[in-house]
Amino acid sequence: MLLRPHCCGIVRSLFNNRNHNKPRKLLWRSVSSAAMRLVQFHRLGDGGGIRVGVEQGEGLGVVDLKAFDPSMPSTMKELLELGDQGLECAERALSSGQFVLERSHIQLLAPVLAPEKVVCVGMNYRDHCLEQNAPIPKEPIIFSKFPSAITGPYDDIILPSESEEEDALSYVAGFTVANDVSARDWQMKRNGKQWLLGKTFDSFCPLGPALVTTDAIKDPHNLALRCLVNGESVQSSNTDQMIFKTEALVSWVSKFVTLTPGDVFLTGTPPGVGVFRKPPVYLKKGDVVECQIEHLGSIINKVV
Image (tube, rainbow, N blue to C red; front, side):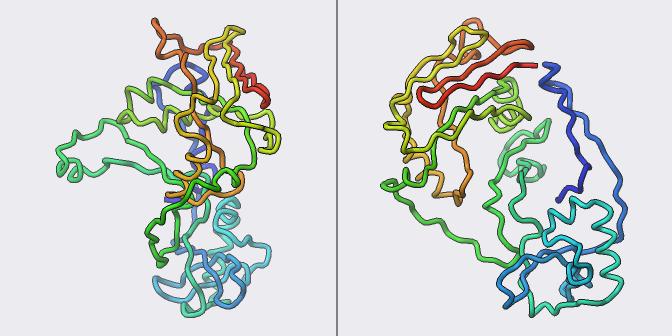
């Protein structure tokens, strides 16, 4: 399922109102278009540039949208961002019958490449639940795939190879500070007790203040770190307490996904988190959270 522009703009109300039981509002906008089969493709022999096209029918020729109208974008994501304008142009291109490429002259790609999110739903077939003797979920169970898992409709599925730790750290550009904000009710009590939804509400990953390059850090596994709430220290430790060091994490994750420039690892949190205090302590409106790591700096975020 590909989302059209504005069809699910999320209103940031859930966390701000401290009410984790009400669903977020969705803003829907109707987008009318003729029935079409939109594709992304390479033209064989042209150097691998991405194009968007419209199939004349399943398995038939493809109308090259940019050849029909040079003002049109070259990727599906950009086309969808145009909304009605892009879809109406695709409809006109299909009706024109011009700029048709034979299937033997193109390679179909995945309809969208590198989406921001890949949202998956687990345990969503009643018969699949029954074959496992698993209870029928009372709410959608959501998990995620990384965008690098996407491949073309006729491309090979690659069996994974092993990676080595020895040079993993050489691929790390630098270090920074992050706050792994968590909605513990969602993480621990709902949605199959998965961590994803409780960790990924909008604004739940403050990051910064700078990327400190590896050359500036003598030993990334010997840095003091603290978290303060309203000026009071609630977490204090050292990165020497990490069970899996940076190079081990990079090596491990690279077994499963292709890591690319700009990817971020959050490498864990020290003791003192509010949910495990007795009694538990949770963030509330007006609280100010400061996370500090030696030589990296601090980030300060207010809960609103």
